[in-house]
Amino acid sequence: MTSAHRRNNSLDRVKINGEWLLKEQEVREGIVNTFQQLLSEDTGWKADIGRLQLDQINQQEAENMEIPFTEIEVHTALMEMNGDKAPGPNGFTVAFWQSCWDFAKEEILDMFKEFREHNSFLKSLNNTFLVLIPKKMLANMLKKVVGKVVSTTQNAFVMGRQILDAFLIANEVIDSWQKRKEKGLICKLDIEKAYDSINWKFLLKVLQKMGFGAKWLGWMWSCLSSAKFSILVNGVPTGFFPSTKGLRQGDPLSDLFVMEMEVLDVLIRRAVEGDSYQATSDLRINLAKSEIIPVGEVEEIEEMTVELGCRVGSLPSQYLRLPLGAPNRAPSIWDGVEERVRRRLALWKRKNKGGLGLRKIAMLNKALLGKWIWRYGCEKDNLWKQVITTKYGQEDLGWRPKKANGAVGIGVWKESLKESDWCLDNLVILAGKGTKIRFWTDIWCTDTPLSHCFPHLFVMAINRDATVEEMWDQNSGVIGFLWRKIQFFEGEEEMVSSGSRKLIVCWPILMT
Image 1 (spheres, helix red, strand yellow):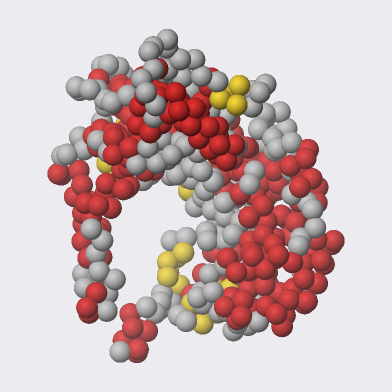
Image 2 (image 1 turned 45 degrees about the vertical axis):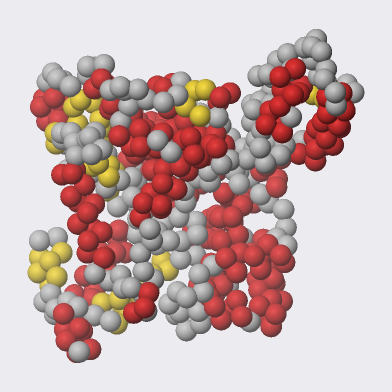
């Protein structure tokens, strides 16, 4: 069995640059040389990005990124790493270092001290998983500020954003064009060998433009330039060479890719007109895999694609392997998704046979759709929310979008809106400034709206739609009431008094 598997995965010949290599040594050397060339920087002319305007972190944030590492931070970064990965070249797994922390922490902390002061590692550490701990720590620090320097048009690898936001935005834009009978073009660009082609010097220039300090840039350079590669050919490690460009997918610092792509957001027009993005970053748009998709009757589309060297696409298409510009309930558009899932269904076993079983799909789908409604109420400036609000409007002081009526809207968002009522009915609001919370009708102070807890008070209230902020007296620090002049019945005076005291008691607890 093992021999058959090895034969099926062996490589006895390879074609490189149109030439067949047949001898075993030639195959090994050819593969190593190809990868070494792929991971080596192009020494040609580079464009200058000095005049580009990129968002920056402030001085205080830059200084916070360079404060000394604490033992707690180092230990946290180590424990967050996946301990089950294959062992490094020295044979030790991450789990080994996690379990031996108390024994080895002094040496690990000394390594961090050396790294912080001299921006370098011992070369022998490249053969261990210890070299990943500083990268993990720097990645954790980077997550805190990356959202401030990466524009809202990028949704992946940024805390608080989701890659599916782009799918929703694209479908909503296409729907608006089609309903208004407007013309438009969708450009799907493929970046050739995106991670492998990242230029380190260009990346450091981008980080510098974004306000990161000199010490931080030194740490970044040390983490990037210390990597070395050995190619596994027919099960045997071959070659051992350094790289001069590229990021590795799965590396803790691979999220730096979105920071380099931020330049594309600024240079997209120049990239189309003058190919300046490739000249700057070493990233090249693969026009053979890129396409232009017309929406509506677009004139001279064929001439345009010939000029650009890409192909013409059509709707419905796919984006992030999901249907783009297609009716949500059309069965045919989900064929590709269904087939990919079907291949994995055969591997899923019932729980009584040792498998994990299947979740209740209907309940899971309801929860995932309802999460969009929760995100709409919680998130503030995300691009997908701006698109939905502009297209449909909002209500309930911004907690929910207006429902899509008639032919307006696409299937994905309409399905999410179906879950809006039960989702909002089961949400509890924690008061902040109180500008978006209705004092009487929202659930914020008790398990039910105050209008239900104190119906007599609610009837007497002059402004029943008042917000918490409007009811709160900033000077006295208490809630102020304006009542209608009505005749009290027996016992109602005590209800008003006791009710008021209850409200005042609960307010300081929840107000933040």
